[in-house]
Amino acid sequence: MAYDEALVDRMRAALLRRKGVTEKKMFGGVCFMVDNHMCCGVAGKDLALRLARRARLQRSKSHTRPFDMTGKAMKTMLFVSARRA
Image (cartoon, rainbow, N blue to C red):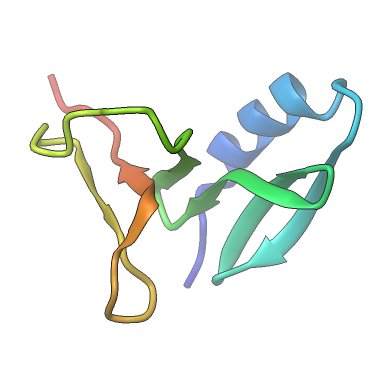
């Protein structure tokens, strides 16, 4: 699966100047790691985000959906799609 290289470039510019951040190809896209733990990434045209365990984002928003790469959604991850105006 191809991924949105412009979105990866934007994330790279924002994240890689921070200490402990590395980039790795994963899940057919690009993942950004902080101290070897996944924090976010890009798969296709979607942003993948890791949430703090106590974070409560509304997953019912039309531009979000569960992070499901294996048939079982991860509770601490979600996909965010670009909003359409």
